[in-house]
Image (cartoon, rainbow, N blue to C red; front, side, top):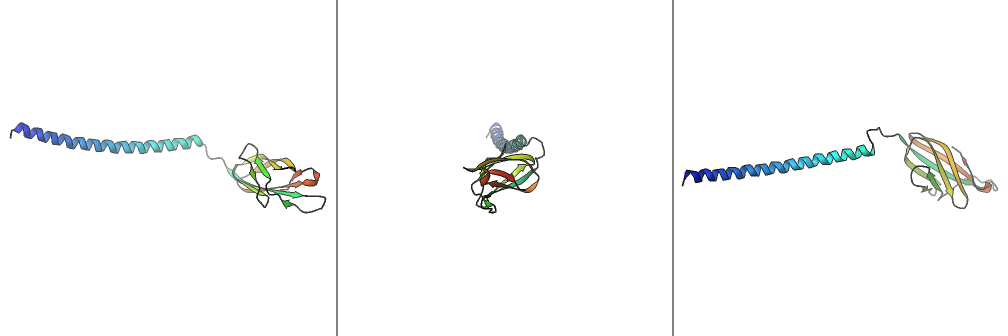
Length: 153
């Protein structure tokens, strides 16, 4: 066997080994780069949603809707199915069987909301100041006075 052939075989074998190592290194680098890119994309999406600003304080607002009929002098009864809509906020929601509806993660500060009781009253409650934590606002609707609404607390 000639020396040139032996050197040629070793050179080919050496080239295959280095090529295989280079391919593995490129694959690893590709996976690392993809993971870094995914992490950067996730961070960028977070910044877009909340651009470097500290999260705005939020609170929880529960609205209780009660109906009274002055003619009978009865105490208020809960109104199930009344619609409460925070103006400029979340989608309207209906009260439960206890006349309550709860909104969580409401920005703190002053707000207004509408209370709609079909065929009885539509009223606007203004000047409600939401603070961090839980807050309850009770609204009394007087059916005998054409649906007059009063904020109780």
